[in-house]
Image (cartoon, rainbow, N blue to C red; front, side, top):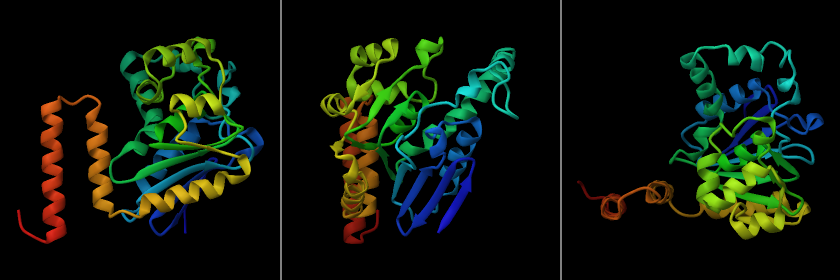
Length: 259
């Protein structure tokens, strides 16, 4: 079932699996503000039966980042230019950027597990979109890079937190400040990639991971994801209490007893 097909984003649902596809292959899946609105709409439209969402892309590149027209004086057609955005007051500009960020935030919600299936370029906004997902299966031709600083900007689409969590502060700073490319072997070694496979095997490897994620009972995965997400910042005593509460809910659910 096709749930959405607009502005370079197509969403299909097959039982418990949703597939979100970037489909501007002729532009290396460069993103526009309209792309971000469509991605945000995709998150809102997913039915409650979906357990796993796969993010993929048509063509040889996952996403080359923000459409270069955004950086021209006229900006993207029908959209505010960067110059117009810069003239907004603080509250208005904050609201605009928050709206863009919505495309990158729903992927971490606890009721689904999200998997980015990444080949070729994942640059800037493309890198941040891959980082938005819980897991990343990468082809051996992958190339990650955070190029925002070379443009005088910062990565502002939710990518800083997962990047630091995955590779650590010092390595994240070095990657962002230099804008250098991170290729498959390094991505695998430093934890950006959960799995690296030959490009020809990317689709089948992603499907195998999805099948494994669907094997356990849904509520156990949901509770575990919530625990792992809270573990980074939680006080150890609070985290253990959360584990106890979650386990109590699972035991009662499995045994059919009342609270």
